[in-house]
Length: 147
Image 1 (cartoon, rainbow, N blue to C red):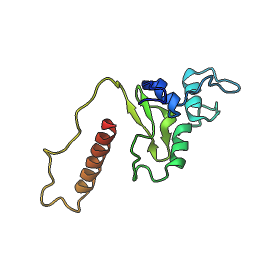
Image 2 (cartoon, rainbow, N blue to C red):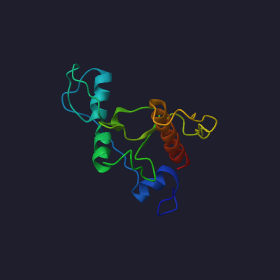
Image 3 (cartoon, rainbow, N blue to C red):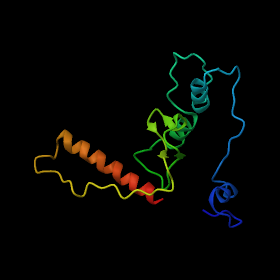
């Protein structure tokens, strides 16, 4: 992506206003557990009680409100991309609001069930419903992989 000055990559995205950087993240009365502190940062909820599960992230909750019809209506581009795997920050009550990319330099092939077909007895069965779900996830994954 190029910004107004022709710059590409993250610098161009920042110049174009499509990338935000958050610095100096912290919270009052810090917890001494690295894992709990990470959950607090990613959830946006300062709750040091380890028995309280922090299961949604601040970005996921924002995106869930901003895009109430997701995932039934997909935007052209992914709502968020997290490099390096799963992040609590992208989780909402609906599930993950973004995609995780372990290694952005690797491009996987298309996901397809083209060699798999439903038999004549499948329509209306639980299998057909699950098959349609898997096909839909493959389609969405391919759309976002192209973007």
